[in-house]
Length: 331
Image (cartoon, rainbow, N blue to C red; front, side):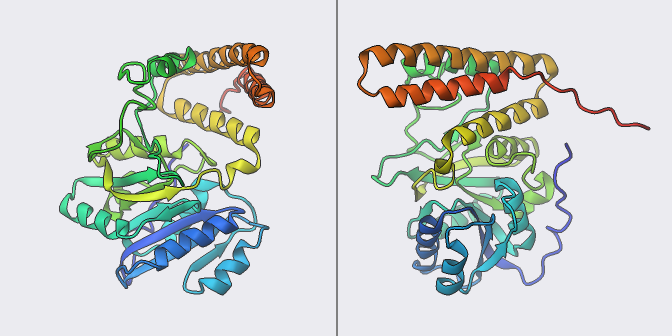
C-alpha cells in the first residue's frame, strides 16, 4: 500500500513554532484533562492545538467548543481510526514541530519547551518521545525494539517474562530498560510524539491502513530508513492514563492489535516470514490458554482467567483464517 501523500506539508503559510494534534474518540474526561494541561502552562504564543474527533457521542464536542474555543476542532462523521485522524491534523497544521498526543495524556509543565529546545540543538533527530508515567507515577514502558521472529518466539514461550532482565529475550518489549537516560531507540510508542516537519517531507504521513495500532512501529521504521534518528528524552514527561478508547471493547481492540501487527509484518517482511510469524502468534495463544486454564484450578481470580482464555481463543480463530492473496490488477 502506498504511503499517504505528504505533498501539502511543504506548502505552509503563517508558520508557527509548533502544532499539537490530538485524535480523540469518546474520551470526554481525558480530553478535558489533556487540553487543560496544555493551556495551563506558559508556552510560546505561536502555537496551535488541533483536535480531530472521531464521531464521539459522549459530549466531547460540546465540552471542547464551550471550554476551549481556541482549539481548531475537526468533527469526523465516523471513526476514521488513529492514523487517518492524525493525518488530517498534520495536513492542517502549520508548526515547525508537530506534537501528536493521545487524548488520555496529561502533559507535565515544561515538557513541550524542553523537547523543542532539545530538537533545536540536535537537528539529526526526526522524532522525540518523553518519559511516560502512569497516574501513580510509575514509569510506563514507552520504547520497543523492532519485532523479529526470534523476539516473537521468546515472547510466545514466555521467556521474556521468565527472564525480564535479559536483553536477549526481552529485546522487543525492553522490560529490562529503566527509561532513565537519553537514548536512540527503535520504536517510541505512539501516545506522545514530537516530529520535525522537515523530517515529514522525506518520511511521509502515517500509513492509514493501521486503524489504531501498529502505526508506531511502521512510522519509526520509516524515520530510521529515511536517515532520521528516533530518540527517547526522559527530561520531559507526561502522564498516560491509558485505555481511554480501547477500554470500551477490550477483545475487539486486542484483535485490532493483531490485525495491525500482521499488516506491519506483511509490509516489511516476505511471505515465508509472514507465515512463520502468524504461526508463532498461534503458539503464543495456545500457551496462554494452557497457563490460564491451570490458574483456574489454583487461583481465586477465575473471571480474569476465563476472560483471558476467551480472548486467546478468539485470537486463535482470527489467526487461523486463510490468508487472502492480494487481487491481481488487470492491465
